[in-house]
Length: 342
Image 1 (cartoon, one colour):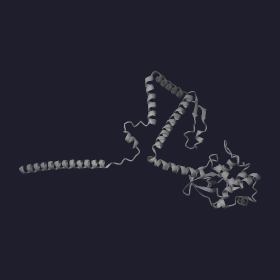
Image 2 (spheres, one colour):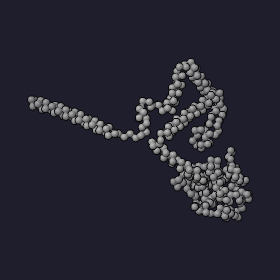
Image 3 (cartoon, rainbow, N blue to C red):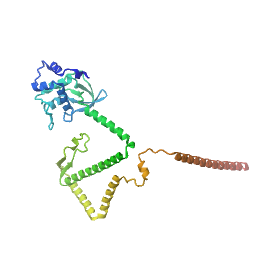
Image 4 (tube, rainbow, N blue to C red):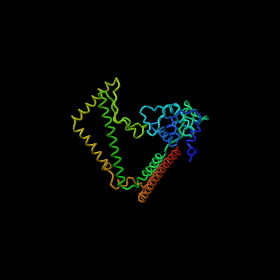
């Protein structure tokens, strides 16, 4: 157990702030004297709903830091749209928030840092809380979910590496799931693009799940909002007209050339059927399909054939070298005879 967990939080809180004229309301003061409640507050501050933090390197480790003023501002007046937990009392004044921040420094949940270079910090010698200083988070919160996710990731990785020894029904299940997910993503992306195109032509930009592919957001946040709609910027009228003409031309071609378009649709349907049926590799024998994920080890017969072919190649090369040497000797003899006659 770390020293900060063995310390009596209410005692440290009173010793640290006794006689300093803390003006925190009695209910909030008693609430945050309990370290469990401080942990709840820190869990909220470290969550995605908490104040924005920056990344830096300190002692060869990646850390997250925030300026003291921004931390106090968030605790007193959270940013718009923030859902403050109902079980946590709100701070009515800056002195109340500063009092709790000083306690966080005292129990080493945050520590004061100094910038030494761009994106690099070092521990400051002064440990007191100051709104103009930078503070690095030491508190990591409840690690249960992270540990469970790490364990699940390791187990999933091991299962993937053991794919060749999976039973056949599991391989078929994974195949169907992969194909279904691929088709679903393709149609989802196509649907989003078509909806955007239709609405953009009439002068609005509407996206279905606009944050779906935003890598900076979490899983749940990627599906919020469901729809976003804004008026297009000025100067795009000619582009919208051009896209409308091109789309109308494509529709006209699809209607007037039914044989070609129907063939295209039929080909896509056959492709999807082949995906699910596993018949895309129709030119491979059934035995090769069943053994497609097994390691390819040459048999003894194949090795002997390979050795015989190498011997034959060496024999052919030796015969060619002998003929070439004989030809060279004949040429040299003829040159010697010519020299003697001269």
